[in-house]
Image 1 (cartoon, rainbow, N blue to C red):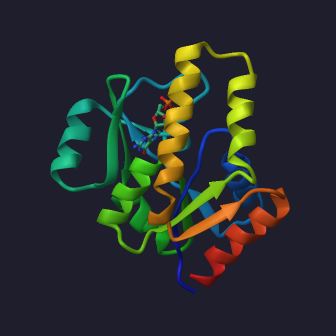
Image 2 (cartoon, rainbow, N blue to C red):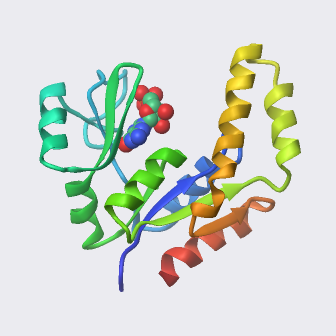
Length: 182
Ligand code: 5GP
């Protein structure tokens, strides 16, 4: 059986984390990609499980060696999906990356077989209202999230599959079908 590299994206609050976590719990033939980062580990984080924690020098060397499917800088640190880890894991299992739209499209560029799945809310309006109505973020943060949401959804035609999460179990089954069918 062929194993799949799948990128799962979708706007914040859409439930993609729950979908991915449930699939990882239920299936032994699917694992999550472990990214490399140059940031310091937080308390409780385990090297090789949450991230591979590596030095900036090593990260830059691996960029030169083409060892990242995609990488980006966040808050002054580098983060990337290591090609070597993904390729080695794909020999025996399927690999899921929960990753933003920019990362997913970059990954597809370097790894055209990567299957792109976007999780969408049943109602975009409702998700927007929820983001605004949570009341935990300031105005700037809300605007930031809304424009990010608009941007992510505007890229949906570049995805291979769109899944509407109006029922969690159906969405999980849909993602599993893609893993098994690809
Ligand atoms: P944190 O330091 O909180 O674990 O992550 C900071 C940011 O880095 C988050 O937005 C997270 O999604 C992003 N990130 C984590 N791993 C990767 C990766 O492999 N590639 C990219 N492009 N971003 C990542």
